Length: 435
Image (cartoon, rainbow, N blue to C red):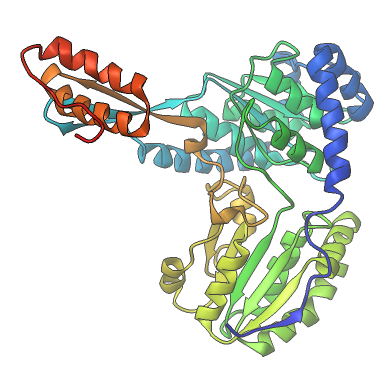
């Protein structure tokens, strides 16, 4: 593999993890011990909000009245796309049954989890689309109860557009609470909430650490790190669009890696020239995030050919992967490690982040090597069942008894023995370990 770094990252996306972990561990332990009182104390301390934690129907309606009609239309457009894609995903999972051997039937059943907790960030940015992505998929999956927690602003509570998006997407309860205390409240069933079976959604490093710490006690969508994005581009790519797309993802946060992988040096050099100017043209907060991310975490990698580019991409396993290169079908067939794939200049990560229908809650920090993003399937348990006639169980019982004895598990063997003795009393079976 021939790989040349025209720009190399000076930092990794993992920083001050130990300090964050210690803080989160202390908060979770306190909330686990003192319950509602502790959760409310942390909410007052960190959210700086003294309004209702539970949004009433009247408060949700009031919030909706503050959302301009054009934005409502856009949110409904996005929600409809996400819903329709989620419905197609759900259709790929079905209940089945199959006769393994004559008389022995085994089956699969897909069961939605009962209660889902959806975290919707509202700090640096108001993540309206996250309410759509997380709640809609839970609703399509068939979850009985869906809670949304979103950090309130001191003066207004939950952002009106977030409240509106959560409500039309199917949320049963909308909570004005954020951070570790929100994750804990959903996990432990505090503040009048049902205990969540799964907690999903993006969040800052404290939210991510809280989900990681509580995993096992509650299901989670994935262990998340800073968002990341990689672009594969060849000589046909438009360097201005490539540069714009890189900057659009770098604005997520100061530690959000973006990578360009190409086999065309002139393209790489032009992108390197264009990016600083595009960052400088952003509003102040966006500019600060993008500048830090580009300076410390971005990489521009020159490869020998497209196979080398694809291998590099699979090694990085990006959350978002864009291909702006010839022969898109080849790339679709060849690439194997990514959270979500965007093929061609005509689409972009921003579409997936907001409105095109695929989910934007995706694996980061190379987690795409082993998992995909949030989908209807994350809210569903695939369970199995079996039943058998007495004749159908005969051969299975014999094999079970002998295998169990070979393993040294006599109790397992006897569970098979008693059935053979009851169902086939006239037969003599050799159920010793050596058969």
